[in-house]
Image (cartoon, rainbow, N blue to C red; front, side):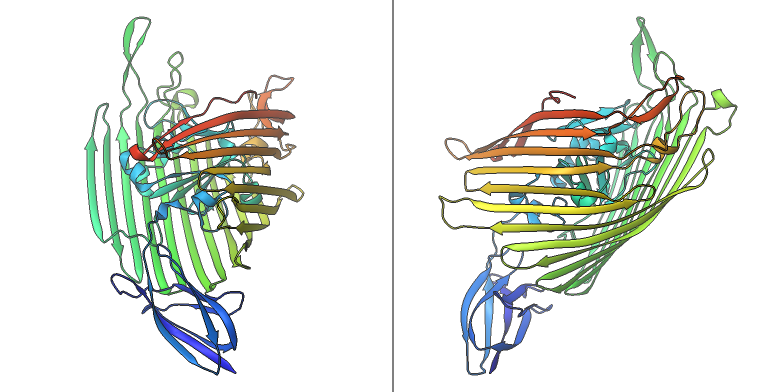
Length: 582
């Protein structure tokens, strides 16, 4: 004897259908999603009493007890009420699954679209400079190199992602923040602390995920064009096109800035002008999302930049003709398939090209000093599985191959293969005296060309009630030597070291956050972190005087981060002292 249930899921105020809402019977395999008209049907339900769950992002869920008997057919309209919810609080980077920020065990900050728009015309370092635990290293005025340090790490120990795909340059491991202009991105997710157990190499200090646009963006079709001009020959041009419909989302952005960089300075009581500090930087982004079905999205993303900069050198020893040309192109095809209400599959196919050349005609009579071209292609897959009300998991794998061509090196390649597993146990209680409990565990195995398999792992927990949040994490992390570290061509000053071992680190942190409501509402938090490095890679002179990278052994970085958040004035103040030792 089997029954069936069908119905419509509608917005309670506008009575509009809610497509792709989750509908399932608790502790059973029976479930589905609503179609574009908000309709659903579940058939062949055995007799018995079940709990029907209906949920939709931004709405209060409905849970209803139903007694299925006598082969009946049940039909009903379900009206979902909207609830106050900020979609920017949904974070994916820290767990590879959508989680509200207050339910994370990791320390995460979100640079929202509103904050990005305040810094119009700048680069991502302008948006990150106020985040806690962050230090931006400036190597000159506007347009010059800007690097990042998280919790005392080097810039090579911070992993950068573009919509979840790594974009660190395999040659140097660095990202020059000045080349990434803010208008290309709708938000930035910043994870502080090691995450190699999910993302592999480079994720020692933390992760920065640059998100180009939200899949469920509410942006309507529009065209925006902005032109800015300023001192020292600065000019900025920004073109932004968006077209959004039920089936398709299209976004095109082009941004260009340039400047002379000829600012004035005082040396030996003389007023001088900085020379050879000019720059030209262009970013472009094309993103297309095709909603093929209610449960299938196909995205195509193309992002890149070109950068041409003079290298002025130091004030004492200027280089008046040296210059750097740098470019990066990223192409990604993303397939998101919601197979059922319990299984979501993501497949990402990606390609990245990095090109770099440096020349100084004064030193080598117009001959090129060095030129690098790197091509990386790969695929990764993630399967997000809801095992029960309290337990979910992500299982995935990744493969990519990088090919390096250079006028100073033989053709070199590196292959990488990885598998990973992440589990989350989430227990909520309705008793005010008992806190909610969350536990995350993760495990990853990486295999790189020339190295044995490397195991990374991590675990985190959080205890939370209405006023108090306590969370902590431990992680084992890795960083593979860059091509520069291994194969830098030998000359009279420097040489690479092909015998380098991977860097390893063990990181731990514990934090507490208190919410105070009276007399003024505010949040007060403190986080202690400790990072122990092994086989740290550092460039230093050898016995012959040549600078070469070596594994120097152990190092330690630890510190405390304090934060105060006052929602009334919508401002966050962060104080992060430097590491206590290193």
